[in-house]
Image (tube, rainbow, N blue to C red; front, side):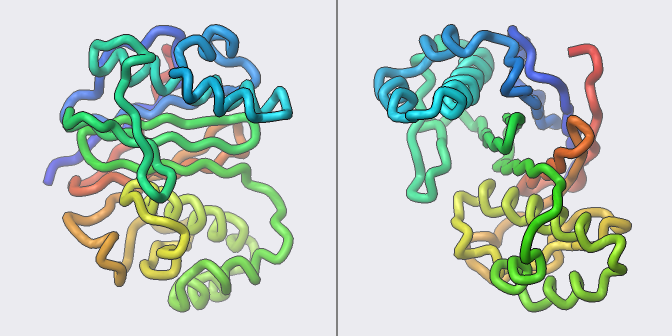
Length: 246
């Protein structure tokens, strides 16, 4: 299986092309300063999505939904050469949005406080972003959501690496289950590498939903404190390349 490039850039106002077959495109979005105003992106949404946006009572949440979904439609529309509002989106039981027409294109979107990431690939793909911060009861979250093997690995890390190990584990595991269309009920059913001094990887899989050609992981940071992880199915390796010209 070939190496695939993960091209990482800031979300542009105009999207140029779909990824090549040996590429994953990943755009980061500053939700406070989107490349297209939120009210314009709202007009790209379907009537159902506009209704959903208006259900948010807090203006910030409403705007962030419109920005994320509107830019996703802009991006997919450019990739498929259709108008943003006509991009055929539906939702899996897990809540993951998917294309309802067989195009071969896969995508995933994630967001946390102030930042979103949209990834597009010709392979199944999942992405997760988290602000690296102090988390109360970090040990308890590891016991609850991580596998026994990961819990042991976390406790074996030097104290100075535990926070990085926690966020490495959380983001890579979320990326895998999002790529697979699974739910958090599967979080303990596979093991990832927690040691931040080693490359990210999946060490073991025990859930049938997650088995197949295999998951390859990569990670990078944005805005200095945002940890981002991506999972791509059925490739040989991932190489992250940050694009500074977008």
